[in-house]
Amino acid sequence: MGDTQRQINQLRERVETLMKERVTPAVADAAGRADRAVSAAREQAEAVSGQVQERPLLAILVAVGIGYLLGRLLSP
Image (cartoon, rainbow, N blue to C red; front, top):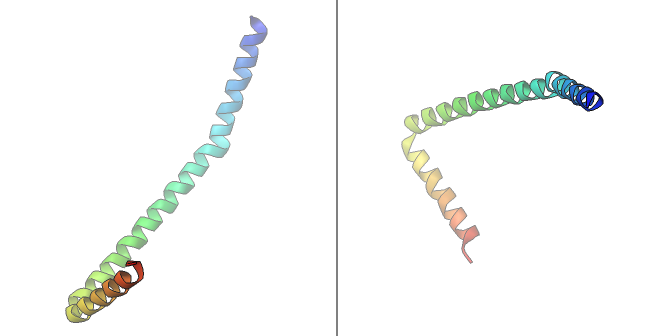
């Protein structure tokens, strides 16, 4: 029984070390990237919104053109 418990303790220590050295930094890095992506997307959305407000007719024409092209490409 003592040998089994020792092996379990060693395995637990290995898992804890891996969590500290690899998993936690990887999760933190992914979270940082996600935050930056969200910030960039918000900035782009604000920029597009500003352009639409400044030139609504152009925005409508672009939307109609894109819709037409998508309809032509996706219809059988």
